[in-house]
Amino acid sequence: MSSLFTPLPTPATVPGWLTIRLERAALRLTDVGAPTTAREDWRYTRLGSRAPLSARPLPTARLATPSARIELTDGQWDTERSCVPAALVVTTLADAVARELPGITMLGGIADADEPSLLSSLSAFAGGLYVHIPAGRPEGGAVPLIELVVSATRAGSLHQRVLFVVDAGAQVCIVERHQGHPGAERLAVTEVAVGAGATVDHVRLGLSGWTGAETTAAAGLDLGTVAATIAAGGRFHSHIVSLGVGTTRTAVHATLHGAGAHAALRALSATPAGCSHDYYSVIDHAVPGATSAQTTKGLIADGGVASVVARVLIGRGAVGSSTTQSLKALLLGASAKANLKPQLEIDNDAVKAAHGAAVGRLDPLQLFFLQARGLDSATARALLIAGFVQEVADTIPNVALASEVVHYVLGGLGLPSGIGSDDLGSDDLGSDVEPS
Image 1 (cartoon, rainbow, N blue to C red):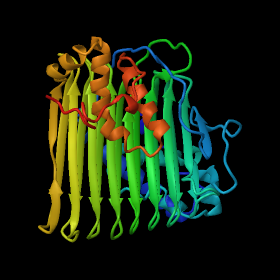
Image 2: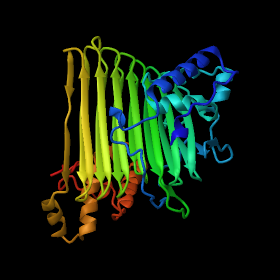
Image 3: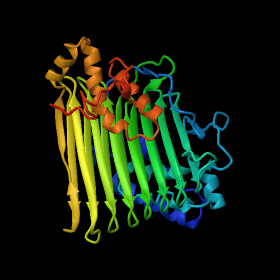
Image 4: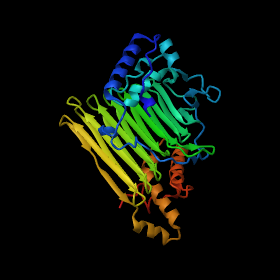
């Protein structure tokens, strides 16, 4: 893992602003060091020895046809397998820096955080991607759907960095799929600059260790970071879905930089036996009058560990801010473990804030009710679990993708996966099955 946090030498051909940013990142990384469990924000992450785990078969995708498809394999842009319309600008970060494309100066400057992933991957920016999303919609008024597929075909260390620049007033749905070899150690950073009045729905599917071919058992590591800055009136909706094999940690940093900006962070994890899933989020209310919400749902199989640390920062001048937090975990085995930590850091009195956390198990009375009506035990459990995850799945703007997520969750936990939203009766279960 150490190679993931060893910065490369500063290139000699980059502009002054990027040279300064690279040097500052290297200095901060020297001070911060590689992550350890001694750090509060990494205390739950399984960074030491990890048990080898076999890959899972990758189900057939049921996602609607995207407006654009971008494929990255082993850290390299696969132009032959990518399909990019003329209205969308996609190029390497090195090319975007050289041509001074719009918003490129946001690279490495969206989140001011001592996040080792953000700091170390900046020096490897040249192999990353730049995506510019213009304002307006294509013919027919459909919201553009951009699918980014990040695959690993081998074990070893991989860096990936992507910068999305979304123009003012634009509306887009971005779906990232991180999948492949269970022995890969990945460090993937996505930066999103949300323009004034723009709306971005971002979905990150963490499917590391899910492959389309037989793979020998290995101990993998998936470290993902999403950093977003939201201008006035902008809206950023994040959906982090962690279904990977091995150790997974995803960090989300959202900064509300303009009046009326809104961030909604949602996370859903299904942690198989022997695996560890961590979610760490920070929402920074940097201006007055911004709003935010956080919702996390965790499913933990016997022998799995899932952890959530969700922070909200509201400074002294950020009056009129409003925020809510809801963290829930469902333990599916006697040795399943969950760590939930909602954290509000508020420095003024003119705010609205609420938070809560709950850990529980499936209600035996609900299981009895379903089995008494003819369902077998596995299907009854699957139906209750599908109801539990529906609150997050339903917020994904693409219906086919939302159904696919539920399918992946159930399949990853070894439960019948042919259950979708149509099978959930609101009169019987509601949209959310509460832990008992």
